Image (cartoon, rainbow, N blue to C red):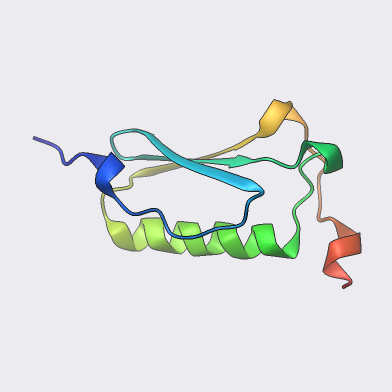
Length: 84
């Protein structure tokens, strides 16, 4: 029997990312910054790196899916926050 993934402790992350384990072995990352068309801030980048590193070491996460809230995306980084 496969372990129940909902018992895994998802690491801390910024509020602009929603992290869930919707099915066995599946990690879902949702970028949730619709006012800025989900442009990636430095905090989001750090959180994504941290979560994916955790998932790789965890061993029970086989798939990581990245989606965008409301299907809005601006390709590239949010330069205003990267310059701060």
